[in-house]
Image 1 (tube, rainbow, N blue to C red):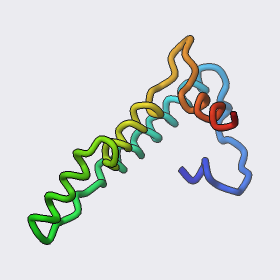
Image 2 (image 1 turned 60 degrees about the vertical axis):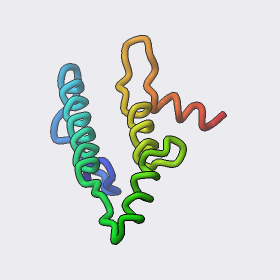
Image 3 (image 1 turned 30 degrees about the vertical axis):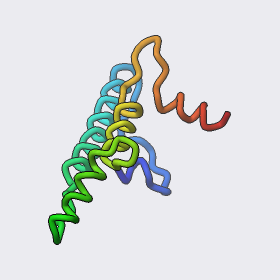
Image 4 (image 1 turned 45 degrees about the vertical axis):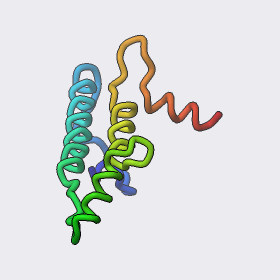
Amino acid sequence: MDWVLSDTKQTAAVDVAGSSASQAGGALFADFSGSWLDFLNSLRWQRAATLSDAIDQLTLMADVRQSPLVALMNTLTCRGEPARPGKPSPIRWSIGQAAV
């Protein structure tokens, strides 16, 4: 990921034209989706000291209006959907809507 976020300017080792561009895009998507998968797999339940604390956590997770897990899944559903031919990318759409 450093090659995306780096401040240093470097020339590309390979010319990405034609089919190489689609291969590079596929590699970028695989890297991006792998990072999301690692993040989601790293989420852990917070150990509760008492039964009351465990019930509070379960109540929060089950509440559609307040659950951070539901909010995360809704965001992933909306933002993680790949663009299809004839349908704009959800990321570009949200950027355009944010500017309005």
